[in-house]
Image 1: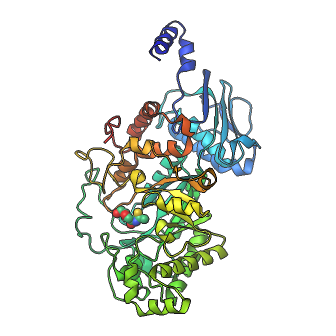
Image 2 (image 1 turned 90 degrees about the horizontal axis):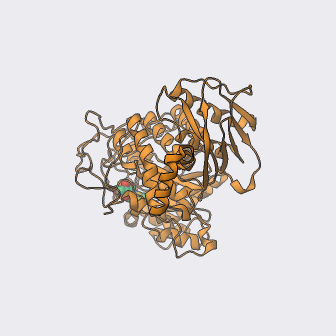
Image 3 (image 1 turned 45 degrees about the vertical axis):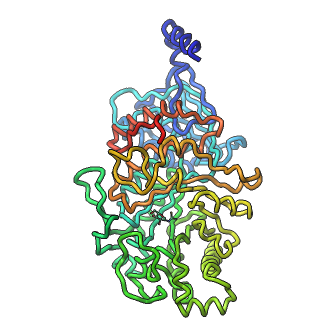
Length: 540
Ligand code: TNX
């Protein structure tokens, strides 16, 4: 290869245009196929966006592109067919591209993006945008001439954000979604409920936002003694999203092909809800929203022996499905203190009535009831891998977080699975250091470790592996107090994940990825995003 490099340099010296043609296009995630050709397409005041096919469907996407171009250049690209240079967007029927793939052709006279759906068109636009400056510039907007054929390896390319342990503003959430979309991630798992705070407005139960969204005690150690990433930025302990804000964020995400998966946590991790409505727990005891991670507590769980719990949750879910149009609702299911149910007479009664042999089956009964309810609303459930215990709900999708074993077991049973093992895709863990790093929760999930992750376990046959929809990284925020701290923990690891779930397995290349990271780092700098600059070439 050194020989080839020398030759390339020599050629570049005598024939500069050749060097240009060979200069690789820097895109993350790496496209399936990309070829650079000679010249550029220049976006200027004469450029328009031309919707060739699928006009109505493509309008929001075109508006997204126009807004981005305006932001970086000031040019107002009209969305109409007019003479002159155009960015042509067209929905066609191209089998090889699948649901989310696209074909992009950039020549000096036009940019053409073709796809089967608006998803693919959006991704074509994102690839174009990655070749342009990230912030306002007076320089010419030059898109390198190139031909790309691209489609994702997995349909589930997820990022999760816990907004309960600390609250993040609608603006911060939008920025998170926008970052995801830049790297072609398409599922935003929104952890809206946990012990310290209930974050979603439910009209029928106003105390959920009057009471359950506001932590009183901010001093619980060690959770609240973490350094902030940016001096002066205050942690936000309380807050919630109004239904208006939620609708706005859902639309914002849809414009970027991001589907929101709301997590309505149950039956555990709900001390916040119990603080508002104490009769929903087995003990019925009054309490405050819990600050820390104490979930092993009878007063933190809904009582499966109490019919009112089901009425409450069905009412909540009615409002949830009206807000979130996606196919899935995540019902949590993790870390329930099932032993606590042994001491609850109503639970024991329920078990006797339903012929359930232990508390695991009681949890399974609970989840199955919720699945049945959501199926009547045309929604499917996802749950953390604990929902395997006591019998999996018939159509549930399993999110494997305690390693991959739950996912493997579920896939072998013919259930869909999303891989999100703590190692390496929990982004609340350290990414470097730990000296010089802000406090994190647990061991090292370095950029390299994330980059090397393979979501299909060897244990699965080809047929079973089809049930692995993809992978997702999770960001729990017990330690993560501010929006810029969030940025720091996901950047740049989110980009490594994006390549894992989008690019062909064979094309993964750590050295090339590091090279392609450099322009992204410049973009982060320009946008003032906080990110880790750890020494990624050294693995820990
Ligand atoms: C376990 S991961 C949890 C979360 C915590 C996380 C880190 C999972 C499904 N449950 O509630 O935030 O550990 O402390």
